[in-house]
Amino acid sequence: MSVSRPRVAVLQHRLLHYRLGLFEQLRIACESRGLDLQLIHGDATPTEAVRKDTGTLPWATTVKNRVWNVAGRDLLW
Image 1: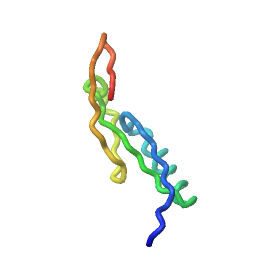
Image 2: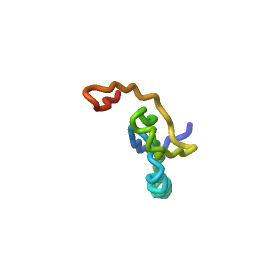
Image 3: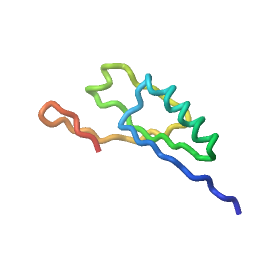
Image 4: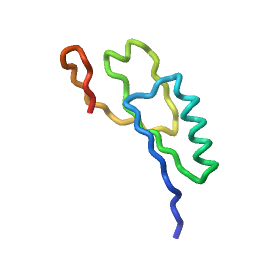
């Protein structure tokens, strides 16, 4: 029977390219402490996508955001 390692999860509504280094360093720091880091993020909304500042990490989990625009503001679920 294998013993699972403790996990730390970070939830982001989207993954920005300038935060990739932060999450890579955080993953290394967690690993050195015997923790598994899970990064879970959605995609940019249509409003945010025009900025072209989205990043990707092969080990992160992408989920589908539901987006509603209400009075010029994006609401996410």
